[in-house]
Length: 169
Image 1 (cartoon, rainbow, N blue to C red):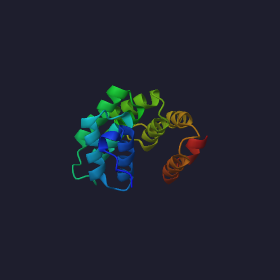
Image 2: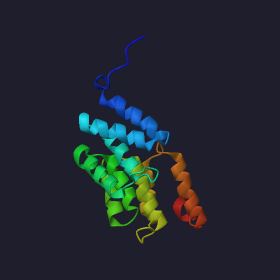
Image 3: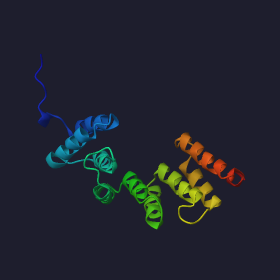
Image 4: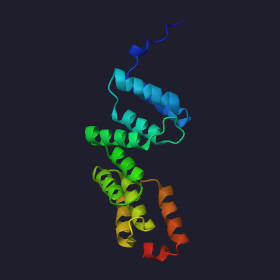
C-alpha cells in the first residue's frame, strides 16, 4: 500500500478544491480551517480568497462575520483585481450607491453576473430609481450565456408588479 501523501506534497490548488468540496457540502468549519492553513503556509490564490470570504459571510459558519468577509473581498479585489470579489462586495452592501459602485467595478472587469445585479438594482427600485431602459441595457450586457434562470426571476419580479410590458417594449 502506498504511503499517504505528506501535506507538504499537496499544492494550494488541491487544498482549495478540497475546501470548495467541503463548502458545497456545508462543512464550513473544515473548509475555513483548510483555507486558513493554506493562507498561512503558502499563498492563497484568488479562488481560495473568494471562498474564504463566502464562508465568513455565511450565517452557517460559527465565526460568521460580515465585516471580516468585506475585508477579505476588499483584499481580493485590491490584490487580484477580482471581478468576483467586487460583485460580492456589491451584494454585501445590498443596495445604494456603494452597492452600485461595486457592481459597476465588477462589470467593468467583465463580470456578467454584475450586469445582472445592476439590472436587478434598477428594476427593484433599491436605489430609489426605476429605470427600465438602464435595466434593459444591463441585461443585454449580461448576455444570453448568463444563467437564464436569473432572467426568469427578473421577469417574475416584473410580472408581479405588472410592469412586464415596459420591459419587453
